[in-house]
Image (cartoon, rainbow over all chains, first blue to last red; front, side):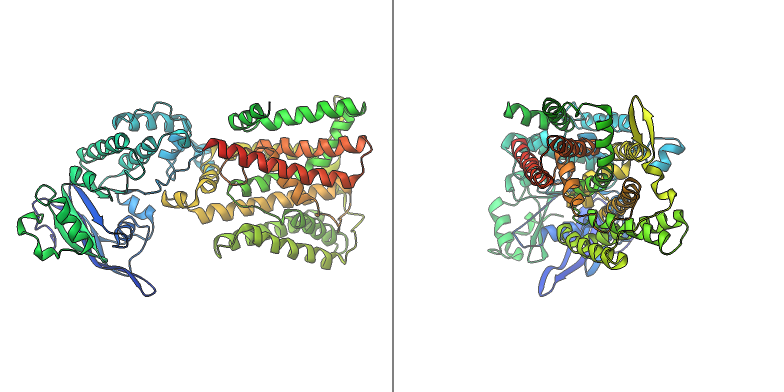
Length: 270
Length: 320
């Protein structure tokens, strides 16, 4: 049962948002926004402050419930009322604040909210955590993404910014089955650590996961994204191909200096 | 030396309070020859068992980045409820104890509900419930001490001999509760979630932790601890004291902070609070032995809590 609205792209759509609306009093944060995410792609999302990027991401990750509109996962409508429900559907989010507990260990942070419980009646009844198993699995996850941290019992606050980002990315990659959403993953990072995170994002995509990347950093987005969704005034202004469009044109659409229909048609992504 | 102490505080959360406890003991041992006797230590333990058990509940709340000012008054209300129901109401002693504990748990739930559902700061919520508990205690007891409580309520005050020291069953209960709280916080999902919520509530929520449930649980378990503490208070004094509860809140908070738990939440060990309670007890006992008037002990407790909080703040700043 294929829906007529989807499936007209070259690859199937993993995640679709249709006409999402979110109002806060008189402020309209999302004004009927659409989004299409294809399997195995990195979709960059750019937009000015207040364009509704964060709101869009919150709606997709279950952190916020839109007033109107529909979200479809693999063509089926889904209604996330909390981040947990989105996660149950295989959508993982790396939040801008990273959502880590700084005083807790790397292993604990990787399994925060889904701790491994010791087998046996006693373990299940009292919900006793299996620290050894969590540490060894954490080590595997971190190693598979080639994140160079070896002690999983180190507190996250002892890590550098890039390493913390690595922990947050490893957590989402370890549990995601469909989609990883990353909100400003390179914010506050130096060039070297920023590149390390880009490399991580590629590795996540190479595992077959679709990635949504929200970033202010245009060079990074242009370097890594397969397609770029330009968000403006609570709507999708255009979807462009980073290999064809110039960075200045993308910024012009983002800020409203150029209307999307003024762009040459070949820069639009198909 | 001071720098070294700070570093120790950062390295092992329970090491610094242990060192402080040993140093205070050494100091008072040089000031009074009666200090180092087994009888004196069993006295300190018995004096601290009420605050010690309250401090378990307070630790949970402070770990979750809250604070509970109502703990002392809620404990006093629990004592009066159980004592008066049994003595004046003629209720079965065990049932009366249960009613007293239910009262303190209800207060815990009320605090938890106001903090999570109405999203009020715990400081102001518990300031309010502290006064409600105080007033209820006075109204229900008519400001009278309840005497001649049934034997079942004083059973935990009975002692057994251990190497020349008289240990009360209440002290044993306190130690068992500390061990249980330590294991639960360290090894269970719920315990780790208390730390996670205290570290960063928004991060905890985003990782899928039911933060409200965790917080309400924390306040309810704290209420349970205050209920047990109210039974211990009746057991220790043999009466339902309508004037109790005034100093316990500050002493419990002092114990928790001296024990190395951060007032900012998410860091600390419940066993540290036991050491903290013992430090408070040792200082009070030592000053009494030295003949220092009790009002100075209050003064010193006040100074201690400010010192401990400052240490906490300074070591945090060093950490970042």
